Length: 399
Image 1 (cartoon, helix red, strand yellow):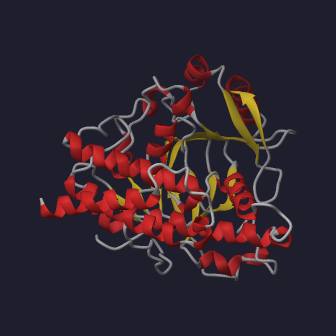
Image 2 (cartoon, helix red, strand yellow; image 1 turned 90 degrees about the vertical axis):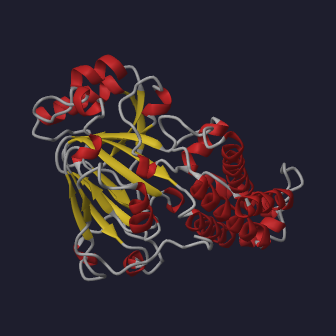
């Protein structure tokens, strides 16, 4: 575990591993067979059996429990996408009260899954952040080494925990997840079909301008690359989507799901590589102003943040906060991260995390674009943080 391991690109699979029993499947096994290997898998409904949402959000016939959802969340304002309208390589969104969306959804079903307003899909609703007292699910331990949400919880700005709700026929266009993060998605009710493409396979689908497709099922793309890995996800099941696996997703029935994006020591190098690629794209777009624009590098970083949600200095702060948390865990005897959504890592996991932070921090500090930024305001300074981390790791090894 000493060197940074890039998520592995593997040959296309014809099937996905299915994990049946939470009592016999360990975190250690998931870590090595799926996180480090960057391989997808499907968890059976046994892994979500205890979730209260599996009971309260669902009726006896496995349909959404409208009355309960309206009673608890009816006044929430939720983002809703129109699946029938293409906007760039996605769908336009609007904000609606949940009760208005549920009224639409029920009418849509009664009209044979048709509406003049299009097929609307509630996506990326930050339910947990807006309703922290609603204990409707527990993050499985396999996904709880979650630096991304740990960081956003610490700074109190955002999170990457979402609820999706949509009628049969709603879908998500072809994409890879934010920051090339891992994701997990649990069906509370309904069924989904996933089309998964291993990292690198998406390159065969680019058009003459280098753009990725909106919909990989179009006839013109049928013979462009090997067929995707197709997965049917049933009610209660959880799918693990690894870093950089592009995918397209369909709701085969009226479906509610809970989704997290997350990054940890296993794929933080993929996040860093993604940010470098995105910055290079930004620099190409605005290179004609390089000689005439004051502080061109700073403006490129601002554009990077607007496009991705983070820039290089914030990426440093991301690494710093996770590092400080791991050091605190060592000082507190591995108790400071305990909670319903975060695992309390043991000594070996803390050491693994710190080593990955050091390796990524060194890459960041050696990066020429980072070196051009004003980093004097960063506290601690990157070189001071690096020395502290190396000292801490040395103490773990000698201790």
